[in-house]
Length: 231
Image (tube, rainbow, N blue to C red; front, top):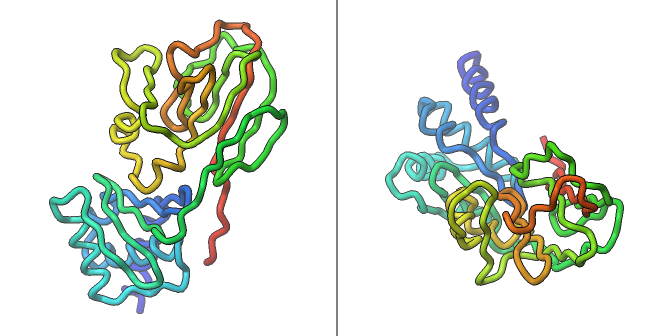
């Protein structure tokens, strides 16, 4: 019993790195592959329960997940009970429910204060751009005031050139580079201004959209809503 308690405690510690994000649970693959099998099998169980607390994996299902994590296919997936799917996305294991897709509604950001938009909380105020704003946070943006800003999902043709980086890439390529799971990409907020992609949450701001220090701006902060977890 003491051994089992130790293994479970160690697994739960590793599973704490499993993050809830836009309807999915994302676990670093290394938390599974670097652990002994007795712990690793408990890690995947603890992680999937963050998405579906009632789901108890069989020994065969745990083994399949360990093989998925340790295999050579960076896009391998398997279906689990209760409508849950597990997919490897490079160095991450993503648990989701494909049949329960969240929606990011297109919304004009014509308000001040805080509102919930899809799986995010968006806060807006008017402020001059600070001199020391780093432009690299990916969650806080300053966009020039005076032109409407729309929050929306990505679209075909969206492109982005980050400040200080050479070349323009499609938003799709940025998402692949940042290893954003394919199932989540349509839930990543894009900020559109002047008919172009001005910023993308978790990636950054378009170089041409960066306002001058002190310029009047819309100050926009986007955060994922916290989700209640059942213990």
